[in-house]
Image 1: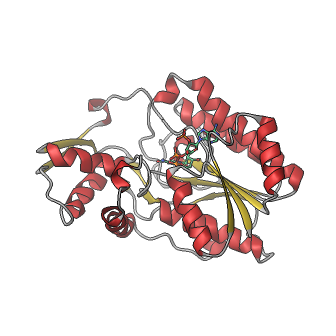
Image 2: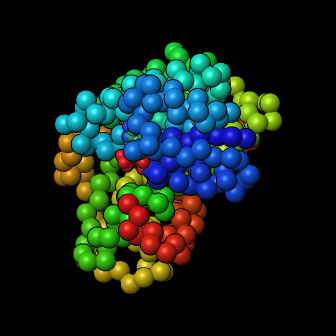
Amino acid sequence: MKTAVIGSLGMLARDLCGLLKARGHEVIELDLPDLDIREEDQVFRTLSRGSPEAVVNCAAYTNVDQAESESGLAYAVNRDGALYVAKACSNMRIPLIHTSTDYVFDGNATAPYSEEDEPHPLGVYGMSKLDGENAVRSTASQHYIVRTAWLYGVGGKNFVKTILHHARTKPELRVVADQYGCPTWTMVLAEGLSAFLERVAEGKPAPWGTYHCCGKVIATWHELAELIIDEGRKHEPLRAERVVPITTAEYPTAAKRPHHSALDCQKIERALGIKPPAWQTSLKLMLERLYEAPGAWCKN
Ligand SMILES: NC(=O)c1ccc[n+]([C@@H]2O[C@H](COP(=O)([O-])OP(=O)(O)OC[C@H]3O[C@@H](n4cnc5c(N)ncnc54)[C@H](OP(=O)(O)O)[C@@H]3O)[C@@H](O)[C@H]2O)c1
C-alpha cells in the first residue's frame, strides 16, 4: 500500500516509516522544508503528485510550553495544517490517520478517558490539537483520529533521554509525582497505526472515528524516571542515586498540564485485536534499541 507519512522526520513518524517499509508498504516521506502543512496549495499539490492510497499525519507543533507564547504557530500547524491535509484526503477520497493527544483532556477524571468523554484542554497545545481533530472530523469522512500520550522513542527528544542526560551528572533528580498518564513507546503506537492501514489495504477498514492508543498501566513521571534510571544503569554508569518525588506546584511550567490524562484503549483493542504492552516492558525494549543505535543520542 502506498502511504504518505507527513512529519516523517519526527519521533513517531521515523518509527512508523521504518515499520511500514519493513512490512512492504511504499512510503512517501514528507516533512519540512519540502512540505509545510500550513500551506494549503502545497499540501494539495504534494499529495496529488504522490497519489498515495492513505495518509498518516504525524506533523505537529509539539512544544507544549512554548505553545503558550507561540499560539499563532501552534494553531497554524495543529489546526489549519490538519484541516488542509483532511481537505486533500477528502478530495482524493483516501483515508486519513490523524495523530492527537491526551492533552485534549483537562485531567480532572478519576478513570482513564474513553473516546466518548468530553475534551476540555488546559493549554494552547491541547486546544490547537482539539481544533485539528474537529477539522478532520468535519472534513474527511474516512478518518481515524488516534490519540496517544507521553510518547518516547529512539529518534527524538523526549523524557527518557532527558532523564538519562541528567542522571549522568546529577546525584539527585526531582521529578513530578502527581501527574498520571500512559507512557507510550513510539513503536507501540506505530504498530497500532500500521494495523489500521493493514485493514484498509485488505478492504476491511476498522470503523472510522476516534481511537485511543497508548502504553498499558498508568504511571507518574516520577515512576517513569525511576525505571529509566534503573534500566539505564544496566547499559552505562549513572551518577543519580535518588529520584525525589515532587509536586506539580514545585515544578512550574508555562503550560498547565492535566493531573490525570490516562487513556482507555479498549476500543482500539476490540477493533484491531491488538494489545499494547505495559510501558515497563516497552521501556526496556526501547532502551536496548537506544543503546544499540549508533548516534541515537544526538538525533534530536
Ligand atoms: N511527543 C509526545 O509526548 C506526544 C504525546 C501525545 C501526542 N503526541 C502527538 O503525536 C504526534 C507525533 O508526535 P512526535 O512527538 O513524534 O512529534 P515531533 O517529534 O515533534 O515530530 C513532528 C514533526 O512534524 C514536523 N512539522 C512541524 N511543523 C510542520 C509543518 N508546518 N509542516 C510539516 N511538518 C511539520 C516537525 O518538524 P520540526 O521538528 O522541524 O518542527 C517534526 O518533524 C503528534 O500529532 C503529537 O501531537 C505526541
